[in-house]
Amino acid sequence: MNRRQFLGGAGAVTLLLVGGGVWRATDQGVFRGAQGNAYTPWHDWREADGTPLALVKAGILAANPHNTQPWVFEVSEGRIVLYADRRRHLGNFDPYRREMYLGLGCALENMLQAAGPNGYAASLTVASGDLSLEQPYDGLVQVAELRLAPAPAMPNPLYAAIERRHTHRGPYRDTRLSAMQRDGLRAQVDGERVGIHLVDDPEVLARLGTVVVRATRAIIDDHAMVADSERWFRHSRREIEKYRDGTTLDAAGLSPVMTTLAKMLPRPDAETNHRYWLEATERVQVATAPAMGLILVDDLYDIQQTLAAGRNWQRLHLWATTQGLAMQPLNQPVERVDREAELGLEPAARRELAALLPGDPRRPTFAFRVGVAESPARPSPRRSVADTLVDGDIPSIGRAST
Image (cartoon, rainbow, N blue to C red):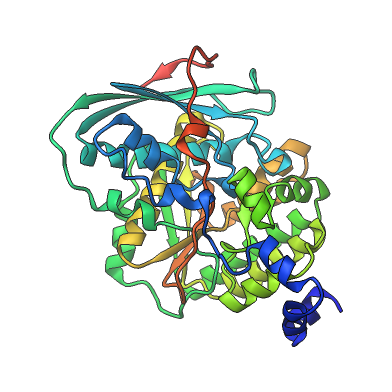
């Protein structure tokens, strides 16, 4: 019996009740869901309120690619330095580390949203330069510095949404966004060099969905991309508690019953696992998306623009959370842009994305869907703040600019 036949039949009941079913249920965390020490940061993030550490606790709850959590922080009374931990990368899935820097931008945005409520005025300085295949340093690289000055505490609805913001990969309802929701999403994107393109016209939406599905197929046909993606998948409770990062079945957007059944089955090989991802992309995520969007930049590999795009994605997602909207990255087309550039292939993905933006010289760096989800999303695991702090001097690259 293969995995699909099992999920469609009654074999799960037998597996749960006989043989090693009970042991496997315990080992896989079938009955625990997204619980345990790996999820504590979502619940204790307000315990350091009024200190610089409160900003870091908010930062580690930010969106990031494949839940790689590529950040390290250096904290003092009036200063937080953010570093990219370039060892926590996606390899051929992110050869330019562009998505890594998008995730670092998300962490910066959470920290900035946390500054006012914790009694700080924050000024941000970020590194400049370009992302490339030949990076000068593979360890920790300084990305940004926040200078903190005491200020009256100010309430912030986006700060309150940090613990409720989760990526939702399940089905969305067949409900169109209202004009107010569309305008509200656009209003969250600011910056001279970052823009947003929202799509809810059925014809254009179908074209963008086709581009996403085609890019996903290209990824699963690329064995190196699949291997680098698979090493971040945490299938068992033990793996989740050990690493406290990566993608999990609990956050896959399956129903509770399907999540339980999937946990009970033997772990599939990488290619099979990614074929399920393709099916979910095509039949659930694209098929039920009432709207999709692209975050645009002038220069796809400019560090400052990439960080700014990440900040905008995080702010979009926080605002959407306050409005009862769900969001999910569908960034496979831009991941293929990077991979094709790395290998010197014909820029098929780049051309397909450009065709969706006639007359617009900017380039998509992030694709997503947005709508009202049919059920709540579950959180992803997080490393503790203690695991992300560092002391001492760390090499940095590039020059700084405000």
